[in-house]
Length: 114
Length: 117
Image 1: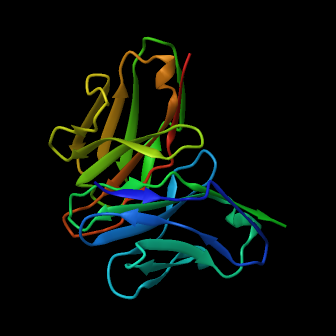
Image 2: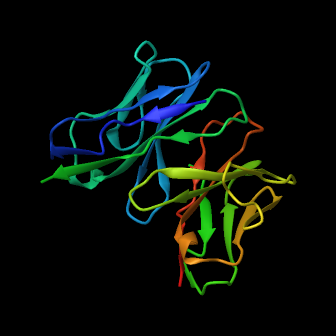
């Protein structure tokens, strides 16, 4: 079985400061890892993914994430937070077979204060 | 990126009636579509997976006779909530993926807010 842990229900950061949203995963074999963002009453927007290759993945809106196999982590980061980054962030994992399904973490609310 | 649309975005229905939600992939062919349910401040729970032209595969605990899923074409899937009850009120999100080309992303629709009165 595969699982995702997002240990923080909420992350608070001041605008302009760096932010980190944590994610650890468990999956048999090689993982495909994703980050999505959800704004109120909206669907999920894709931010970035790790499939293979460089462990540092750059995505939309200045976000990046680092795949760490030994720590089974895929933390989301941004060097300088914006108030508009405030939203619900989901980490997701699936096995690297074509028909595997995504498993989501519980989500982390990011609040960026002015 | 690819676009997935859902219709309607919001629906209010009376208890005992049925509601159909449509999910369309607008600029790609979705060999596989997924239906999720999300409760307030909670994560997405996968309800079922459907492959085009095949019967849907339901997750444990999801009533297949209550949540009817049809994936008749590569661009359209529908979820029908039959004999809806207030406990079915939720945010339903569809998602689509083209597995033929080894694509990895799963694209999500904007969601449908169902309220059963």
